[in-house]
Length: 80
Image (cartoon, rainbow, N blue to C red; front, top):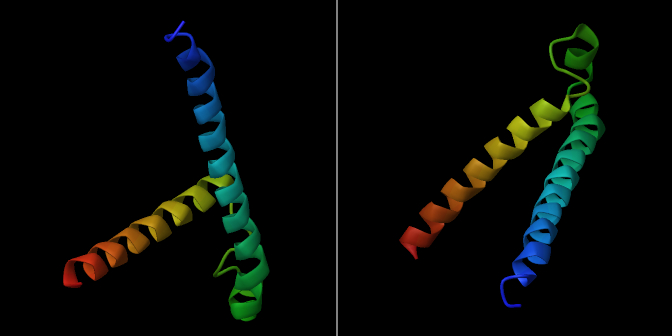
């Protein structure tokens, strides 16, 4: 009976991780559409900067921000 609880826990954890990833990517996409055209209106009109990004690009931006945040946290933690 102790082994059967893993059958319910593992799919639940995977669903939580998938839901978290989808929410993060949705937030990245929405924040991009909301801020970038206001910050760079001329560049968006000329096509120099994308006004909208794809899901893959949102994933890349999220990974990039996570790496930067991790590096900042490592540096901050080592100096303390």
